[in-house]
Image: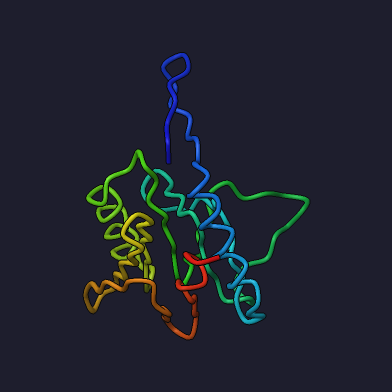
Length: 148
């Protein structure tokens, strides 16, 4: 995400492409009643890591409107990151490795300029280009994401 400095604080400023891609991915994920995709949810990993989209099995996560949770201990089955103009592929790859090493089965990193999707899990790393990507039955057709 883009960052702006204000009084020595860094504030993330998502870009249009970043927000648009998140919305297109969420649109497809929300069609599957077996999962619950949640944007910008802070996970209890290290000092708190926040993937762009965390995907849980529908039965594993429930809000409590009387008491909120700032860092969720339940790990998603899939984390999705979208690289913004101010981020490097290397930095996002490092974050993906931390997420996988913390117990998340699959991490997808979407790189919009090359229309590439990096899938990282314990078995290795794979790259797809404008392709239907699937992990554990969770599917996103990236041809629809990039050609919407």
